[in-house]
Amino acid sequence: MRKPRSRSDTRTAVLGHIWCQSGSFRTHISRNVGLTEASVSRIIAELKAEGVIEESRRIAPYQGGPSAFLTLSKSIYVAALEVSNSRIHVAVGSLGGDIVFSEHHSLPDGADAGAVEATIGVAITDLARWVQRRDVVIDQAAVSIPGFHSGQTVNPIIALDAARLLQRLTQALPGVPVTVANSMVTRAVAYRLHEANKIRTDPYLFVYTGHGVGAAFVEDFADGGSVEACELGHMVVEPKGNLCRCGHRGCLETLLSSAALADVLGVAEADLIARGDQWIHEFRISAKAKRDIGERLFRLGLAIGNALNVSRSNRVVVTGWTGALPEEDRALLLDAIGQALLGGAAHIELTLAPANFGREPATGLALASHSFVRRGGARATAPDEVLTTEDARE
Image (cartoon, rainbow, N blue to C red; front, side, top):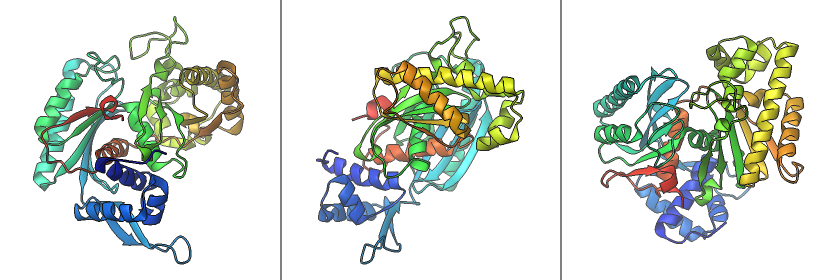
């Protein structure tokens, strides 16, 4: 782990550790960010004075150990606009994780530009009115969009003009810094905050199979690491296959999305998502469906193996509907990874994680809080600032 140098670096390192661990003791912060306890105490005093962190008393982790426990403030608020699961979600929450406002509006796949523009307008108006009515100060906003990449003029997934969306949002929330990210980056950030092993800091490939299918390469969050989207779901595996919502045929997503799994099971996608990790127990899976799912998982494993050939990592976390699969399917997936990955998969640590269906808008708010932390906890007093995930990487 590199030692932070600038004031912004040290603040970001301390806040990043607190964010990753959902709270921490001073001695643990010092040990994990490479700063002396005296330096950590100075930074904590500064952040407490600014209202960015809060201190409470906890039972010491060992006899004679510290009892002052530090968490992110519940009095600083962030906002999110998240496009996910055929909906647009808007929300406000505290850095501490409390959601104080949430609304969503339907946005079916394939909606034209006019319908998308109108729905976004209603969602942003709802958000702005709530903020104004409650007289809440927003210190960071985040926008999560499927298929988004910085510099891209046309989004292949949704008929959405990102520049126009940002213009409307910054007009509605003047002076608020905004981060824009691909939805797979958002899900990877939320997984790290809510589900991941809090101790591990080594990089990994995060894979999500839901309404959308994709991945992200994740570096050490607490050390200013990056999260880079990987369009795994739009890897073409059957050139003459089914039409994907991106406009291509035979994308991996057409085989592995929650909509594709629902078709295999003969159920509605909404019912599948509502079951979360219990879908595998609550729906009858015929022998034919089981074989079909196995073949699709094999394709997923090959895709993951090929992705690891491009960017090496020894850890893979797979979440979404695949997170509920039994050990035999995990073995099948690992075998397929090994058949594509140069050198095989003997060194690969594969984790099947909870489904995380229906976590919106908590996922978008996790991205917003992470963006605030990456800025060193600077309060929103500067002119409008718009960052993409590419801009925010160190």
